[in-house]
Image 1 (tube, rainbow, N blue to C red):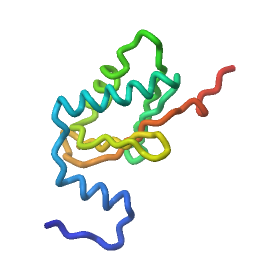
Image 2 (spheres, rainbow, N blue to C red):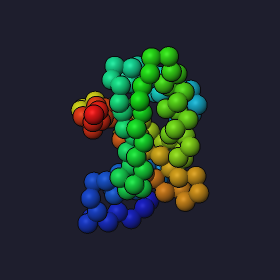
Image 3 (cartoon, rainbow, N blue to C red):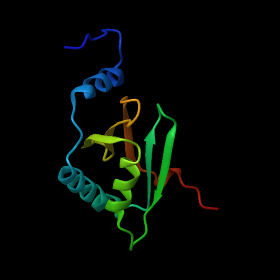
Length: 119
């Protein structure tokens, strides 16, 4: 069992807890990305954010795009997908393990309509 630092914050605690998680199998990953794609079709702009890595990607959803496939490519390029969970606010928390460093990172996918300024 790993030692737990009582001074760590919730993110650090969750990050450490993810060490025991195995990557999602391909079927579970497909099911999750299809589920998310259905939500993404409802809004035009989405952001995938990992503040710790300073990794920010904006999706502009178009009608005839395979959103699930594009999302799956985007997240699997970042590492092994450990979990994908819908949050109460409608965003998605996606834990990813870096291929090289084996470090775990939380990414958040959320409606980013408010962040787009059209002039």
